[in-house]
Amino acid sequence: SRIDVKNTVEAIDAIGTVDASSKDKIDAARAAYDKLSDKEKDQVDNYQKLVNAEMKYENMKLKDELAKTKFDAVKIKLSYSKATYSGKAKKPAVKITYYGRALTKGKDYEIAYKDNKNVGKAKVTVTGKGSYAGTKVKTFRIVPEGTSISKVTKGKKQFTVKWKKQSTQTTGYQIRYSTSSKFSKAKTVTVKKNTTASKVVKKLKANKKYYVKVRTYKKIGNSTYYSTWSSSKTVKTK
Image (cartoon, rainbow, N blue to C red):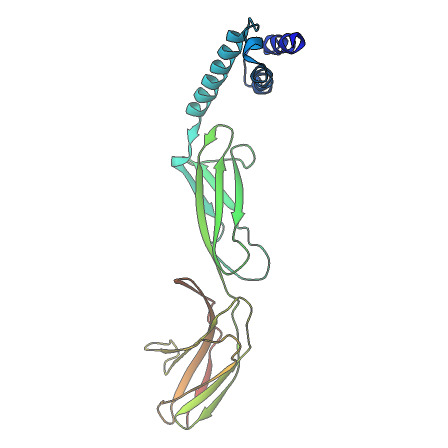
């Protein structure tokens, strides 16, 4: 209709001088023009002004992007690379520098955390903002909560170790034992059920003092995440 044509002409004229804030006006004028029939479009005598405005705005955007500092030289440091599972999201502090100059969160970059609650590999995505363009990803590990040995009982050329069951975010346990307090030449036994809380270790030397410690683990795909070792306890076999 004549009214639609008139409104479209006015929308194009309303664009005015093109600057960084012109996007909404340009989009509104383009939407109005595209709704017209071919016959009505022929009546829009300032259509070239819309085309020129769109081209100028896109060139401004391109120049602005090219002027931004790429993230290639930005260095990212997390306050920690490993955390212990607690049931709560882990959010290590992030320090970002560009050739030694500290950047400002909210002004120069934004941060997003992902997979940062359960045991596994967590991601920190840093996206440039303002004068900085690009994205970088840093990872950190979340390991299972550890356990503690409740009792070690001696037996004939064997011992039985009992520990506190830790079934949340775990697959099983590992027991390490050695005749050395430094655990040199230590041997490791794996318990593959996280509901198990004791293990008999056999085929040991008689009348020998052993140092024993336990840790939890969780297997995810081809990766295995281990807790820290428990404090060690000693036992002397019969």
